[in-house]
Length: 145
Image 1 (tube, rainbow, N blue to C red):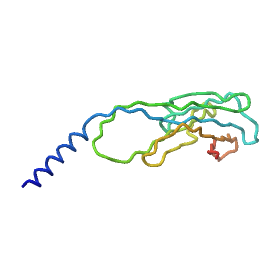
Image 2 (image 1 turned 180 degrees about the vertical axis):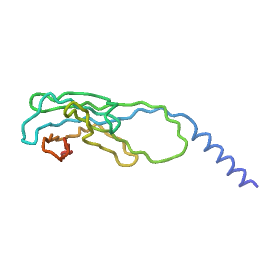
Image 3 (image 1 turned 90 degrees about the vertical axis):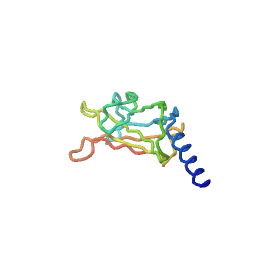
Image 4 (image 1 turned 135 degrees about the horizontal axis):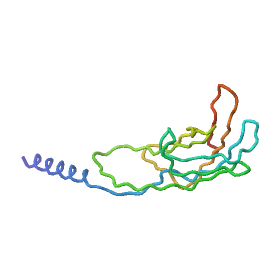
């Protein structure tokens, strides 16, 4: 009987702890820098780029425009949330990268972290190539080492 009481007390304590709100801040996207070029290798200036949270590119966290040599950069973005832990579990963080091509924002790159390892402050380097060749992806961005 005593063991059963201990188990019940333990389960009640865990249940109460699991429902407590915990606020936290985290890096939603790391710093990003890179280049944006045409498939011919020519740098493309004036291209609008976005870092956001969805693959439809409708909710960007930040916007920037490439400079005359096709270079761009974004600072890290922070988010704050009040978390209510209902049960222990794994989490993967991610962000999307979008480019305006022919007047429309298009999803061109996605990054996700390993399980339970949020982004750090190390700058991510991207190389983006815009294609005008029919039947190809309009933009391809690749992460550089």
